[in-house]
Length: 175
Ligand code: SF4
Image (cartoon, rainbow, N blue to C red):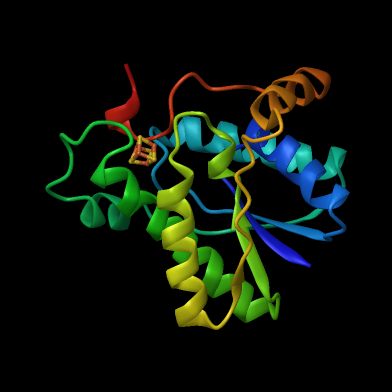
């Protein structure tokens, strides 16, 4: 069993498929207080619910802690995409995932974030492994973009007719 942090439905498609191919039972967790505006957050969440029904997996959702997110990234507003603001953003989302995994008694966690060609897997892995140590869990170091993972996510998103956004999520990544 693995708790999969899900950033959005299109990214989750290929990750759920890959984890299942490798024999894991997947539970999803939508926790993304970075997403702005609220309407966009709700739209992405609805698509993840739709995907959980289509691909049949259990789904949990966290709170929309947008004030907390802005507090955490204070001072990093002008960082470029992929910079220090993103590391804080990854950590916040992965920490909530580790905490939920612990609460649910799921020993392993990972994230769909690595399916994006814009995201540095080494940074995600480092954060995931540190959290795994603190929470006494295992972080599954999947770089989902490998083996044409991103391409597969585009194919599956088309198949399931999913909404695909054109920006990462936060207000600073828009435009
Ligand atoms: S660009 Fe994406 S990963 Fe970086 S801070 Fe914004 S939402 Fe988070």
